[in-house]
Amino acid sequence: MMLGLRTLIRSAITAGPNVIHQQTRNTFILKRKNPFPLHKKGGRPTKMRGRHFVYDLVEDTNVKRKPDVKVILNQFIDGVGNQGDLLTLRPIQAYRDYLMPGLAVYASPENLEKFKDYADKPKTEDTFSSPYVHRTIGCLSHTTLQITMNKFEPWVLEPWHVSTSFRKSGFIVPEHVIEMPPGQIKGPDLSLQDKEFYVTVTINKTEKVNVRCRIYHWATGVDRLPWEEFHWKKPKEALFPEQAAELEKMTLPQ
Image (cartoon, rainbow, N blue to C red; front, side, top):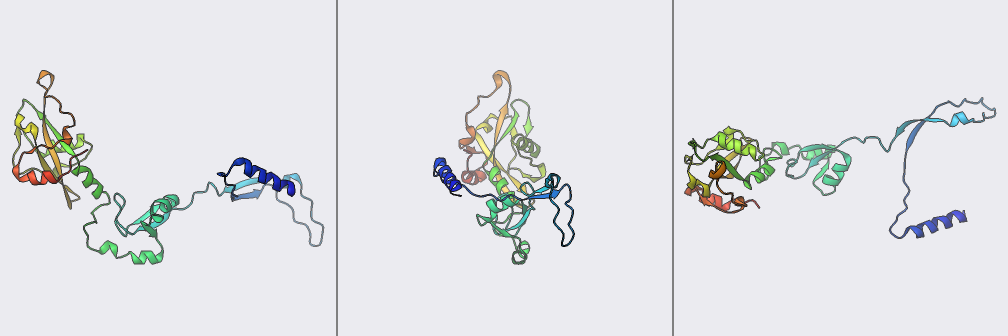
């Protein structure tokens, strides 16, 4: 006993002060491969043989998948959900990202009763039609959409031009949700090159967001216009005076 204690103390000293020796609990469910025969009442127990110590592994609880955990959000979380929404998550994610920071509570019968009326409450300014709307509005409002038009062929700007430009920028925006500016834009007109306007996009038939747009006249070879570096960071003159005040409020991308 004393030898074992000395060995343990020596190991702890050698390992250093930052090493913590902690016992781990591991549970394995085993099944005896060769059943051990029962002895008669009052008789001598049968001696166990080597074959009686051979086991089959039934289950290793360390690798057993734990059931999902249901939690209820107690506040709006951007890109996740609104207050009162029920989420089904993996245990470690639920505990680390929602329960510990106080963003959600367990979906117990008491909490389900407490939050059951949130779905029927009228929407407030921090509640959106979808968990992803707030993030979508943020992305679109900080975007400067470059609409590439031909430098020589006549054209009139239409919603499908804007929708195509959105797709090139990584956004899927159907034509019917795009509200065009108050006046017609047609070209080619090189005076449009240094001016900007905005279109309004409606999300889920509910929320609206204004998106800054600029016309770029495209051509090849010697007719190509010089490229202005970081032009999306620089303020430009408003094409329509009635949009100037709103454009000044909108944040330029960094």
